[in-house]
Each structure stands twice: as structure tokens, then as C-alpha cells.
Length: 167
Image 1 (cartoon, one colour):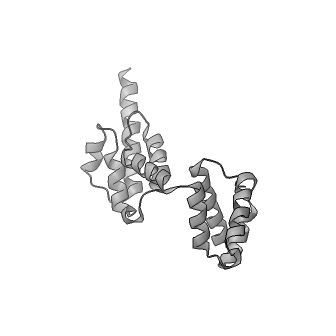
Image 2: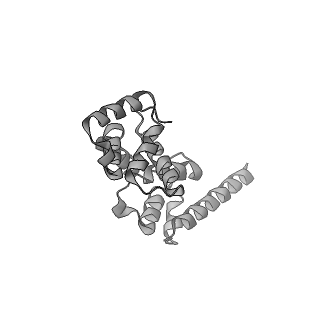
Image 3: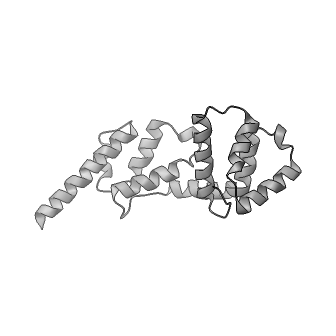
């Protein structure tokens, strides 16, 4: 269900879930996609959709147009830009590697498609690592994101083992 509201991440999650379902059900007709997506609207989202149906010929609407209207309402360009800026400034800081990687992945979906290749993704992840780990990973020059993450997790575990041995 999607109620609407002020949380743009919930809107993006909803759209991602709907598109996954539509793909798995092999739904290709735009009008049917819209019907299935809006079927799960409730509360504010349902009221918004009623106003859209009064202003647009829904039966002629494309899926892309539906998504554009949906994102315009529930996930503004300004909010997407803010998340992109947060992603650009993301650093590990006091987070564990797992926490950092989870945050990295949650923000990565808001990057422009032009920087969504494996090498750029890996470089961005490595550049935000803790200053102690970053040179160790950069020296190995990983091109595959998951390989870099795995190596950093191994380094973190090793560092914890060393620190435990000192105590």
C-alpha cells in the first residue's frame, strides 16, 4: 500500500516495488500498469490520484507520464538533488564498513545514470572510506565494487582482531 505523505524514500521504494512486480508479471500495457500501481493507493495518494484522473485522460497516459506525475508529487527534483548532494559528501566516518556500505547503496540509486558504471561506483565507495583503510584499498585499484567491499570488510575484521589481541 502507498498512502502518500512526505517521505520521498517511501515513494521511491513503492515505485521500485511496483516496477518489480509488473516486470515479474510481464505486464507491458501502460494502462494496465497504471491501474495496478494505483490500485494500492490509499489515503492521501488515493485523493491525489482522483485529482489526476480529473485533469488527465488516464486511459491514454503512458507509464512514463504516470511516473513523472508521481515523482513530481512525491519525490521532487529538489529532494533528489539533496540526496545526490548527501551521496557526494558521504564518508565512512565512525560507521562500520557494513553501515557505510548500506548507506552508500541506499544513496547510490539517486546518482545520475551517467555515473552508474562499476568503476565509478567502486571509486566513489573507496574514496569515502576511513582514512586508514582507503590507501590500502586504493593501492589495489579495484574495478569491481563487490570485490572492494569484500576486501574492506576483511581489513576491518583483521583490525578488530588486532585490537582485541592488544587488550
